[in-house]
Length: 351
Image (cartoon, rainbow, N blue to C red; front, side, top):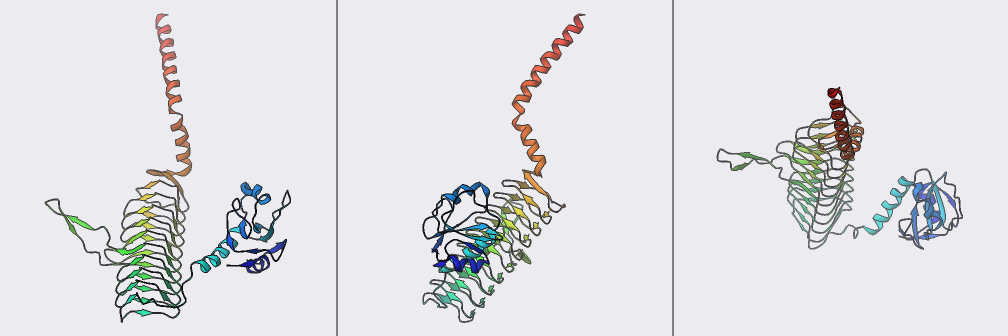
């Protein structure tokens, strides 16, 4: 994708300092950028790179005041991160686009499936009976879409994704490579002889609009009813969402999170990597959970920050961790105090 500084400033409603004809072809990190790249500065820790970067264009906040000469063209915007997100979407569209509305000859599409206008279907895609795919979707090669599954408009389904029967994907969703939507939940009943009898999982998975699911993430179908990912939720790679879980609106879950069955995560919850949730608990709206924490009980107070396993208040955990690191010194001091106390007691008994 080729674009000039003047064009970028117009797209971003930004002001321009420098050459309006400066041309860029790709984004890059400020410390690594070269000629023909655009970079961004939104953290003062990286300001030194603004004076050494070889980028042709640099996005900065409107209030940025250089303390040294800057060689690249500056585009000043109100919100650097949001402006960057908009540009990266455009570059991603140019790099990740489909081949028009073509349906590959190698695709296997059931005659009773429905494909919307402007949707492209890649090679070796399988679409089963009764499946419905909306308008302007991109279905990449080797995707499987099961019987009666429904996909809304403007979705991107990346290579290797599996969407099982009866599952529902909303509008403007992205499912990254090898995500599995609607595999069986982990439901078994132990018998008298200690063997396990499978409990059929006859529900489905519902992803509302603007949900993004990372690569190799698995969202299990409900035993009954639906496993639900609410509007705007963002799930990273390698996450497991068990049966009958509900993830709230605009929640954000980092990689390797595991959520056990029938747990409810509220709206705007933020979860760090490798956090584990027990089943049948409820997490209040706005809860923030530090990476590698474990939640074994419900959280009822909204906007709580938690840390640890089992998780406790974030500040309490930090204070406790500081004490924990001092335990060897505290133990030595305690031994010394006990020794002095014993000496004092012996002196007192002698008198």
